[in-house]
Length: 407
Ligand code: FAD
Ligand code: NAD
Image 1 (spheres, helix red, strand yellow):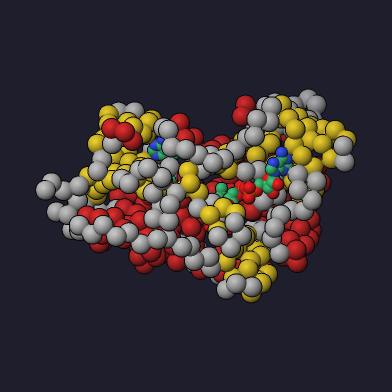
Image 2 (cartoon, protein in one colour):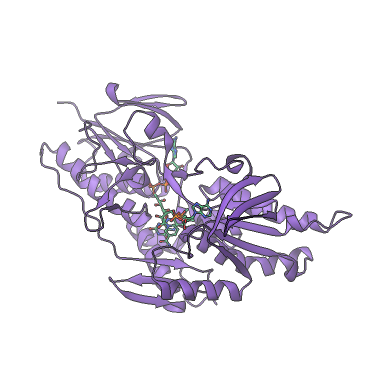
């Protein structure tokens, strides 16, 4: 029998970890493994808010795929997937097509804009290296422009962040640290700059531990972040954001709206005909969608249910990595002729969110709360552990966060 073709699309956490695990568990003559990704690099999405704020250069966040994938075992193709023809077992690329026996979909997330007028056209999003670099440069441009116009325009210095979920909170934490540096660099008085975080729910970080939420808000407010809580964003224009709070319509003049108020799975997967639930594809316990025994979905495109809460697990890197490791084992079983696949159960080890490089909050080991330095250190341990799994000690030394006393 010919070697099966395993095609992995997307080299985010889910896709690249599947490839790296398969290259270890399968010999070069067991299967033809192909990894397809838009760029020649993998990026750590969990660091993009730092790139967007300008507190970390994007070269630290991206990792050349050829540095971690053994190209004698995995054929890497840099291309963009445009369609998946599951009935024909084919993936269509901008520049060709690939036939598969087994497909792993790891195309990640995109922003959910909920049909809010003007968002797609005027808001910035933290989705990729390119979109994050654009935010950094856009903010810097507005600072530079501020002192070069006959009339000072406050909208250049009003930065509005939509959503105080983890992405919104982590981003304003970075901004709070970056703005004083930008003020010095561009001769802008600090008290002229506003960072405004607008959240529709009655609290920031809805559903998270209230004591930690209070700690986070105090830490951020002390560094100049303003919160508008219970405020639903209704519209964005080129230089204005409209929200509704207590049934009143309010407006903020701004050139910079960063939308961090929700994600959905890559729409290409839904458009390819897989049945989606709010943009994510429900999968069986072995991570295959109903009716497709040759397709696995890992990461943010997959929807898996938490049976205890009867709600979907939130899309996280933590789960994407575990799904990838699990899928690689199941694929190795199939390639070796076994037909029994193991069910996947996430092992949630906690949640830690940064509030800039010098503060953080978290809950780990079920209910241990962390604040300040211990949470910051834990976040770095989590990040370095991922790099260790992906590329061993050399990658940790090259890209890791090793300064545990950076205050
Ligand atoms: P992604 O990481 O989105 O990667 C998808 C890959 O597919 C990318 O390489 C992309 O270029 C490629 N791709 C997309 N479309 C195509 C195409 N058409 N053709 C070819 N390639 C394509 N989770 C945590 O657990 N902990 C955290 O601390 C955390 N922090 C976060 C911080 C931020 C700012 C954000 C935005 C998210 C954070 N998350 C965190 C969530 C986490 O990043 C996601 O759950 C995770 O990235 C999902 O991984 P993935 O493999 O599904 O896809
Ligand atoms: P989210 O869905 O978790 O949060 C979005 C927030 O935006 C919510 O609080 C929601 O109430 C608010 N919102 C929605 N519509 C709004 C509107 N019209 N106006 C104002 N507010 C509105 O999305 P996210 O923060 O981008 O996170 C996406 C995923 O990534 C989640 O699963 C999250 O857990 C994960 N993540 C984890 C970390 C971490 O572990 N440190 C960091 C970032 C993201």
